[in-house]
Every structure is written in C-alpha cells, then in structure tokens.
Image 1 (spheres, rainbow, N blue to C red):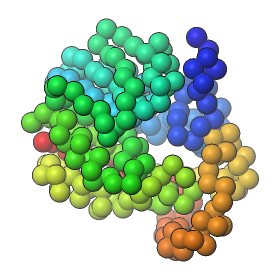
Image 2 (image 1 turned 60 degrees about the horizontal axis):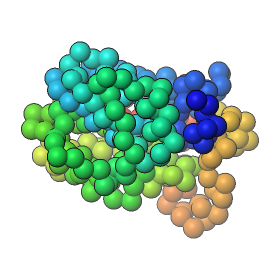
Image 3 (image 1 turned 90 degrees about the vertical axis):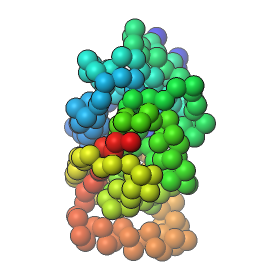
Length: 244
C-alpha cells in the first residue's frame, strides 16, 4: 500500500510518518525523536490493563506503547481516516486496533486503564471540555498521560487554538481531581531562518498570514517576543502523568 493511496501528506506539520521523514530537519527527524521520547516516557508510566491512544496519527506510537507487557489490548483513535487506514495496515496487531473518530465524540461501553493523548489538547477551542472527556473515559486507578507545547504555538501553527504554560496545563488535572504522578520536560531548538524561509518540508504548513495575524492579535506578538527573550529560539513541551 502506498502513502499516496491513503492520501497522506508526509510533509504535514501536524502528522509524522516515520518512514517518510527527511534527515537533518528540525521539524522532521528531530520532531520524531521528541515524539518517540514522549511515547517511551508514557510506556514507562503505564499500569496493567487496557490502553486508549487518542489522536494517534499513523499509529507508530500506539504500537510502541503496546510493547509494554502490561497492556492487554489497545485502541488508537484519530479523526483522519487515511491515517487510520495506514495505521491499521502498518501497525495493526493482535492486541491493537485503530478507529476513526473525533476525540470529542469518541465513546465506548468501557473505561480504559490507560489513556495517552500527546500533542492534542492545544488543537481545540475548549481544552477543559476535552480533558474532562478523557477523564470520563479513564477507569478509577488508571493513568492519563498527555502533552502540550508550553511555549507559544498558536501564532505560528494555524491548527493550534490554545497556548499553555506548564502551570496552566498542570491545572487541568487538578480541576478534574486527578493526582499528579510525574512529568517530562523537553526542549527543541529551531532555526528562525529555516522557519521564516520555509526551508524544511514540514514548515510549509506554518501560518502564512503571520503579520496580519499579529496585527489582529497583538497579544500573541507580545507573547512571542516575551518567550523569545526569555527562552531563545526554542520550543518547549511538557508531558504529564496523572492518576484517577
């Protein structure tokens, strides 16, 4: 099965296809490395039982999580039908199945022992509502593992709807009466020149009307300037493990 048959865009900023990445690009192999580190961290913090990987993309992370002997069965969910078809054929197994569904709407008759959702919550207008939905799907005693960028991303990425600080993200769990377990901090340096010139394949989907966006949303410009002065040219990410 070819990627073209599934209409998968290997250059998409929002989807990583490990088999198609270009070497030496920050938004390619380096981004995959960060994603794999998150999944490895999540795997180390799973409890015995079932698994839901929501917004699983093409499924490589779900397959990695299922390498844990603690997992008895798993479901990977994504809104993109082509990604799910790819995942089913490339990463499906006896204990892993994939389903096309919107994260907000996904429902099932059972709760899951583990829910993993990496780089998802920043894509929605109401992250608290989506987070509560995850909590409803989680069995008592289960683990919810989620990640977000904790440096500004809404200005550059038109698919992102919410910016988070580390404190704001941790509060999502507190508001849902979850117990904090542990977390993973990640830092990714990037070249502003590569981003500005769209030199890398996956940067082609960055916001094209950035000046107009800043003019209409000056608070985002101030946030970007403050973050750059404080952190330099880096993206920061936080992955948190909570217990129900």
